[in-house]
Length: 132
Image 1 (tube, rainbow, N blue to C red):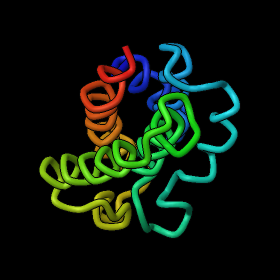
Image 2: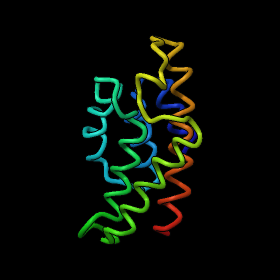
Image 3: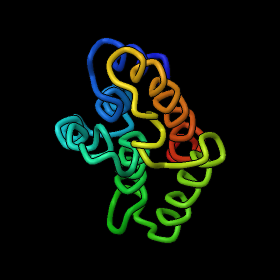
């Protein structure tokens, strides 16, 4: 999943869109998530929560949120915390503005590719393995 997401990211998709596109191909979430993911890029265009973290939470909620596929609110909340904790362990913060360091264009894409890769790994470790 990670390689596909990085490829989509480097080909013009946003961070959030690239992860969702790869997740759709892996059967982890429905295709309708792609249009939703667009709004999360660039920290929801405000520099707040990194779009990669936001889509990880979308996928988590889809699988484990109340009345969803596996419908267990406790697991959904535990996963939500684990996603944020693991991302912070790897990158210290979840703030897009801080993570991107004010970079633009190719330099920003290069930096943010790491966050796309990190979240793909986190999703696979925390969510995909529980679904199988």
